[in-house]
Length: 152
Image 1 (cartoon, rainbow, N blue to C red):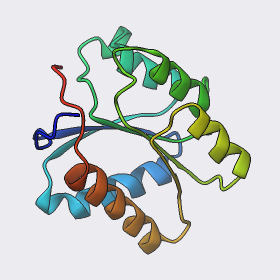
Image 2 (image 1 turned 45 degrees about the vertical axis):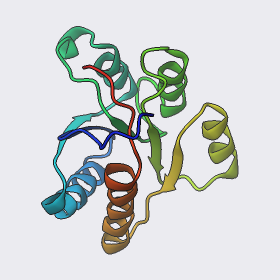
Image 3 (image 1 turned 90 degrees about the vertical axis):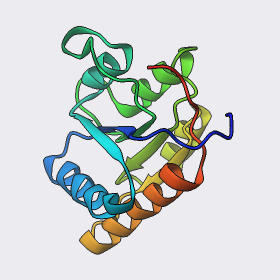
């Protein structure tokens, strides 16, 4: 990482199959957006996520995300498989991937960190708590942390 300020806007890929959770995440991100410049991209399963990341099919012109918010329990290809493929690729492995899931299982936490997840956040069920968690993610990852800068 270069210490260069984060580029503007920050491209966020949200990988979430649950429409309610996706809506909550989008609304929470929007609430904190007054001080942030970001673009949110949303896909609904693991296959779409990898197509987006590797710029395949319908996502051939997708931007390279600066950060990925990844659910674990996804249709077609689960979040663990998506995480493994991202972190095994030399062109993608530096992109921070945050697990954002309802699971609080110790096995899931250990497995995803062993696959080089950059963070693990359990989604609260309460709307206000969910918004607070997303605000914390925004505050740290979008403003405090320095993201790797690469050409898109």
